[in-house]
Length: 149
Image (cartoon, rainbow, N blue to C red):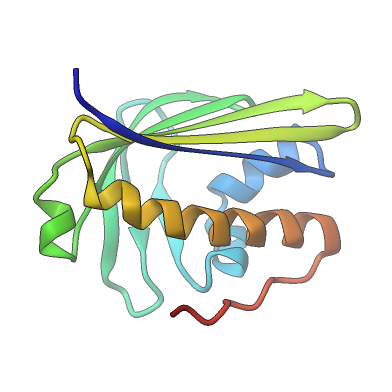
């Protein structure tokens, strides 16, 4: 099977429960995802949306697996850029593992499309978003959105 994937691993000085809350609580998410938030019931089979600050739906899908505070798997499709939407659904997996006083957070984003434009996009997006999550959890202060070229 031809597919494309992006993997990001970070270590966060926080509890697994705090990382889980950061990933799923819309008010917390707004603080590190530059005003965006997730609309979801966080149960297997429930719909999931990432909403931009202006109210547009950036991405949408479904919760495939939910095991708080250890694992979350989302069926994910980009909604507003036609070339990314055309690639169909991808899968985002979040693994949270306690590791000697910190938490190892692994994000795997994959799609069954070789040379995926979506994977190129998330390869640029996830590091900024997850750095913001880590900074907020460790310092209590939000990371400013870096300028992009």
